[in-house]
Length: 528
Image 1 (tube, rainbow, N blue to C red):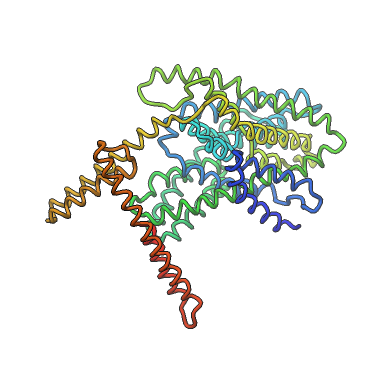
Image 2: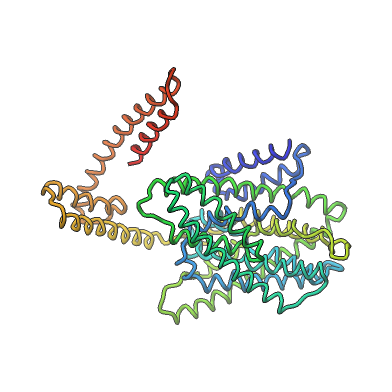
């Protein structure tokens, strides 16, 4: 098996792991990691040969963009305090704790190398948190906080990592320079993200065609990441800024086809890239086995200690941080999404899985120092990092669904239904207001006007059947049954039409482009 065949195997696994995970109640990323570990021990499977400096630029931009599309700027602003405490403060605390313990247990490990180890294992993975926690029916506030933490903690951790690596390689370190680098990196990233977001929004409005617009959304995250890194900014923060800008300002309510096609496209990209990323994590077992040859007991002991530090520092930090957030929240007038019980705090603790960024940063550790000597304890750092990733991702990922069920942490369905009903009412009222505006300038027959009023009411009841009184609900249900029957029959008619048109593709003299154009019209008609 060569590298290309291995890539296709991972992509096939990414597709298959989704229904398998749904069937057995297991997260697809964890299944892909296990698949990678199985492939890693097979003799005919080659070692992964991806340059470490390409892992983050190739994998993170599409994953981050796909994650941001599921959230909004309002969620980030509502959660800014808990996200700051988790994504910035907790990363610093975890990095410091890991550096202290690693420096104490690994003989001869320099403090700068220990800080680099702490920085690369400190950030929970945004993709793992979203993919695992988002499928468990957790309260939306928890998912929002976990997404925000995962998206922003990479920014802090990667800057800390680069500062520590530079200090280890050069032998010099300046706290003031490190702080300045952190601030400048954030400023450059936000400026580039906003500029590219604005430019992409203008360009997509000029392109017009849905295919070209979706293609642009695929290119923009890579451009934002690479440009920010070239200008010494944070590529991760630049992608987040660009994606949030586009999500806020590049949405046309009437551009139905682009929106539907975009959802489908990015779901496919998210599934494939996530599967490949976590499959590569499992395949890194090759390197771990080679590194620990003859030293299994000693290195497993170090990895176990660092795993314990990472896991319990998160718990020890979350308890007082959650309490502090609640106290500050009680003094505010606005609503903020925070954990409301110790059970939710425990779920947040156990959701701190490491993943793609940690692997990429570990593999990106340079081989040599500025003076030509080997980087101190590079193999040991990579092995410990791999141990932390495997323990948190596999152990926590497999047991999180059980823990959620055990603690009974579920989304508040009454609140969700109430909000859905509120949106349904607003949608119906907006439709009626527009109908009145049209009636003021156009004379409509009374029968048509009454029919349109019923259609406006149906807009809301189709979203939330609980709208209206019992008589209206019953009338709506009768109409819904008639419409359902009508659509079934109409669907069968359209299906026959599509089969007939498609069969013309193989007829002599048929122009396949014209056949596809007619077929596309029928497909669009089927969506109505």
